[in-house]
Length: 317
Picture (cartoon, rainbow, N blue to C red):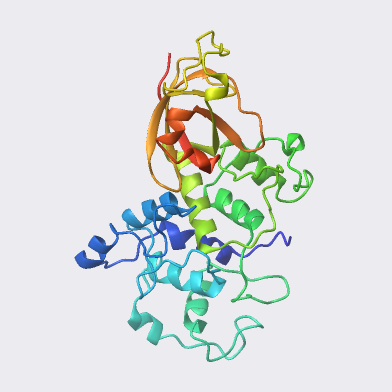
């Protein structure tokens, strides 16, 4: 990865983090509604709906969000110039492009030229070492973590040598960013202990990352996968000494003190439940909570088996 990653990549973050100026009352009312293509049950439902309700993201003219669509750097740059720098139509129309190319891979009559010129003149973007801007290029998870955490001005990163992900090079340029995101419990880790650092992100993926990191930093939430246990161990002792009751709202966690009350929310439905930590576990990759079957059913059907959740402590001993 080129260490001179252009600042323009960072604008992808602002697609989700900065509202458009001059939003009308009607538009604000619409922001409280679901996107038709992101109903409850969508894997990124809570992230997308939360950002929408807070006026941070907007959909397309047809009312949809298009969570599976990739975002180009040029599209992202337009959003940042219209929001962060308060660029108005008059300023755009008054731009006189230089005779020399701004970057060597831009089409002279492309819709994005004025935005790119203004962004470069304001030092938002520098481009790549080869003189290109790559307006249609997408971004992957590793690049996003780097840019996001640098934009948050993180000063100290964990030692990445202890990472044990199956698809992460602990000596790679991105390892420290993965280590930091992992310390916040924001990564989506699959059953094979993979996070796919090279995966090209969709709008839904990016909304999820933005939501998780912002809420981990600002609100103390942690994220991961929740499973359940029930009838097979009903009546057995737990690590705390309490008898496990599948009908009580309890959970297992690796480290939280016994008796801690935790609020758990399904990231695909928005449903919540409060549980008491009475046991230890779970231990599979990416798994953070083992809920009693009754608690799990407050969030999803038992047939789901495993769900993505956010959780936070609401009462501790």
